[in-house]
Every structure is written in C-alpha cells, then in structure tokens.
Image 1 (tube, helix red, strand yellow):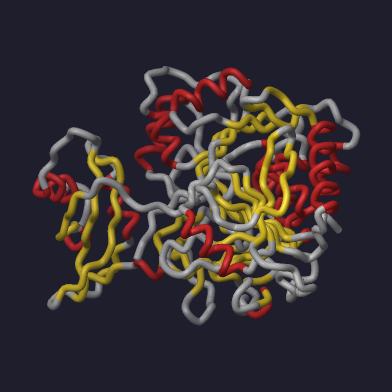
Image 2 (cartoon, helix red, strand yellow):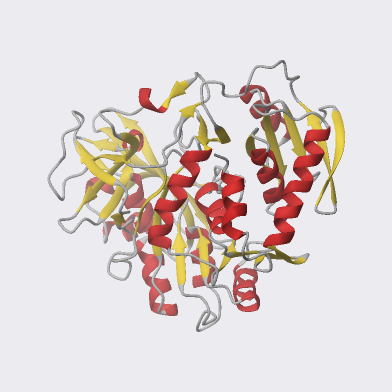
Length: 477
C-alpha cells in the first residue's frame, strides 16, 4: 500500500474541499492532488527511484507538505528537515542518515551540496541537491515499505533514526482519530514545526478531509487572528503557545474553536487551569511519541486534571511496569510501556527491527508514569533524569511546574548536581522575564511554600535562554 494514494482515495469525492489556507490563499484537495502528482513526475524525470532516501527542507508551508507527499508517492523515503538548523547540523544529519537527495526551498542556510536540478513546487522554485549517489542500495533496506524517517528529539542522549512504513502510518492515524474525531467540518490551526510533527497530524488531517490553516508566525496575536479569520475549530499547539494565549488581553477565543490540544512537552497545571478559567475551554494534553504516534490523550479528565495525559486510546494497552515488566498497582510510579498498532517499523542505525526493540511486547518509552484506578495517566518524569536526594526521588518536572507558577520566571531546567553527602541535590537554570530582577533567596522561599525540603533547588543559576530540541523540548544533558 501507499499512504499518499490512501489520502487521495479518501478525498476523491470532494475535490472542491479546501485543503490549505495560508498566505497564498486557499488550495483545494483537487489542486493539492494535482500538485503532488506534478512534483512526483518532475522527480521521476530526474531519475528518482523507489527505495531512495530524500530529505525535504523548508519552513511550514503547503510546498513542504506537497514535496514530502510526492516523495512518499514515489515509494522513496522522505525525511522532513527543519529550515532552522545550521549548515553544520544539516550536513551532520545528511551524512549520518545516508540520504541520497535533499530538496531545498532556500529558506534555510546556504548549502554547498551540488544542485542537480530545479523543481517547480506549486509555483515556487526549489533546488534538488545531491548528497550521495544511488548505487541500487535501498535506503533502510531492512524495512519492507518505508515511507518516512525522522530522528527522535534526543533530549537526554543520542537521537535515533525512526523509520515508519506506509501501513504503520495508516494504522496509527486511524487509531488516533478515534479520539480526535476530526473530519471535513474541521479547520486545524497549525503552529507546530512540520519537520517534527507530520504523521499523526498533517497526514491524519489530510486523510480525513480537514482544512489546515497555516499560521504565519507563532505569536499569540497571530494565532488568535488565524483562528478568527479561518474559523478554526481545532488548535494543535505546545505549552509555549498556550502560555502566549493565556497572556493575551482578550476575554474569549473565537467561538468556532472547540478543541485545543497541547503536546510536545508537558503542560503545567498552572497554565492549564489558567487557560480553562480564562477561556472556559479545556485543554486536551496529548502524549505523542514518534515510535508510536498518539497513544494517550486527556479528553475525559481535562477540566479536573489538565496536567495529566488522560486515558490510553481504545486500540492501545498501557502498562505502568516494574523493572521486571510486572504491572504495578494503581498510584505507584513505574516505567511507562505501550502496546498497540502503528508502531515504528525499525531504527535506522544500527539497523534494528521493531521486534528486536520491544520488551515482552511492550515499547518502553523511557518515561516514568502513574495511573489512577479510573485509568488516568500522569507522566512523572524521565527515568534518566530522576534526581536521587539522599534516597528521596525528585522528578525535574514537579520542580519546574512550581517554578512556572512564578510570574517573573519564563522557563526553567531542573537537573541533578552531585553532592558528597546527599548523593545528589536539585539545581535549576532559570530564565527570567526581560528586565526583571529576582534573587535566588526569593526563588527558594517561593518553592519552600510549595515543595518538600528535599525537592528545593539548592543551586540556582540565571541564563538568557534554554536550548530546545526542534520539537520544542528543553535539551537535557
């Protein structure tokens, strides 16, 4: 099967339905299909072969989507690449992955790779660049029908190349839409970077006939105006965007908006409750992971527990497990494991099939979580980042969540610092609002009112900004 053909088939009877609204106007599904086929013909003319690996680099745009779809339609493997990467980072990804070509919009850094051809992507000139000559060796040859490849965020270590096949894509987006329930009446307001969010988002929306409204920039006012102008019904955003909307000097969001999802990293309870109080609209926190898709979302307990990821979707089995893979009692914190459809097919390097990664059928996420008696899941932290203070466990997020309550603190990164007596203590790197001064003592006093003594940050430093992964998560060493 080919997932692009599936998208075409599902929209064959509605060619006039609008696929995109953006700075160029509207594009119908009929026009979208024709554009994808046109780019695929251009690629075939310059000798694209099934099994080749092709990077696609651009900012969020209809052109980005069209090109990724054209590569997948050609039975080549597409790797979306962010235009915000530096040249050295792009070169490293190209070398590491072994992609054959790079299709480049020119919106990123200037590159030295040889230009093979110019392509017309929906009336925009793009360049096709050579990275590695194709010698008949298929990209990701250990996978039967690879469609798309992307590196994990690598927040706590080396990122992995995740390969997802056509069948797996269909399985995971169908499973996700049982909870999202999106269709032709929905206009999705899109703010997240497509290079890191594409499968259980862009492909899903297009298979189910939604309209995607592309926000020009990611400022709160711009997001609000896009919702209003396009009559957006569904906002898929990150905690950063939620915080921006919370700070807007408006009393209500446009009435067309009925669903808001927060993903990419955990949202604090404070920001979730503030949004609910201000806009009278719940935030569905979603748990997205590239190896599986969207196995859990908080559609039921969003008002009471906005910081939880909710229940597992119908097609997935959720496990809070001991180190021996035994299910733990409700309320206990353990390893977060998942079973279900649409899992990744393999890792790229070293070539590792899914079956060799699963443990007793579970995909182990690396997160620690707990679950209530009625099935509500809460992420407690990353296993690798847990802090052990004289035998007491501290999860960075619970300290970061308290720090986020302070109006002068923009963001924080909490981690362990080695201590000769305590084993480890809590340290925090803090970004303050511009022009604001805040003493370390004031921060500790603020935390002391809200946290147990052993959870207090004992070392505090002020930084201008944190380093983020492309998917919006703070990088942790």
